[in-house]
Image 1 (tube, rainbow, N blue to C red):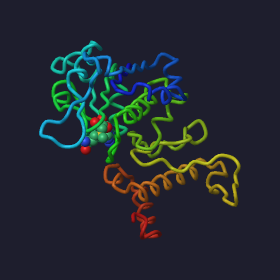
Image 2: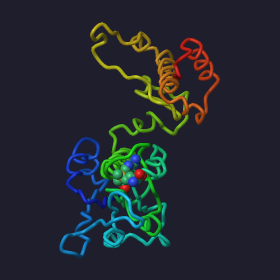
Image 3: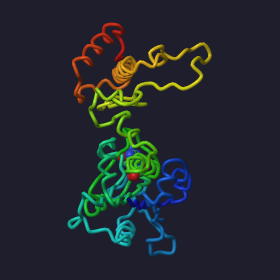
Image 4: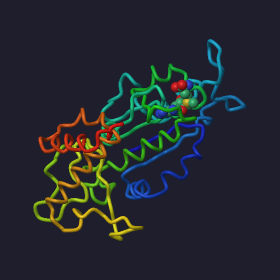
Length: 275
Ligand code: SAM
């Protein structure tokens, strides 16, 4: 997969892509990430990328022309002819549709994504209308620019590319994992998976050695080696975490009768768990 990131601060990306899974994926040839300095597509002495907003008001707006020239230079198909299942041009914006694991999954199935990073008050809206097939927000807050959002999107997508993770099950069975396989806690021929089909739940808590740390022991369920006990504990913890931190997710998840019983019990035990 190839990412092209258009930004006025290409230097900001020197760090995030040079470590861990992203670096490995790049070295293995799974992903190519190119950053493009928007100022290289200006034609005036001052390399101007922004101008005052029509209608007045605070701040500056990124101009359409340099962005058009930058995208055109990448040889990406015009919006009307674009095969949006293979390539996409994304505008980063606080007003965009939420970026979720499902969107990351969709992007990971593509060949190419161009990401436009806004700055100042934002980007001339004609860029959105004429060039972009998606407007994405990474959360309900305002960043000072799209660069950190671009890094988030690239990171979440690259780790889903086949071969990017040492163990492909790691991305199948984690928070927001789209697969609903509540019974998959134990591989038939081996120990319980480190994680299992979250089916949209948040992940359960993880522990490693030592078994006791500053007076806190790990839960007994994880010690005995009983696969079914471990599965049940993990499912319960995933339900509890989700109920406590993101109860709205439970409305979108196919829950088993066993899950419902656990949730009823948790609500009974901790009446204020969702507050
Ligand atoms: N005036 C805009 C508004 O109120 O929605 C905010 C502009 S923001 C200061 C500058 C740029 O940061 C945006 O054009 C966008 O590219 C990026 N940005 C800010 N918040 C973002 C978010 N939550 N998700 C993605 N990009 C964001």
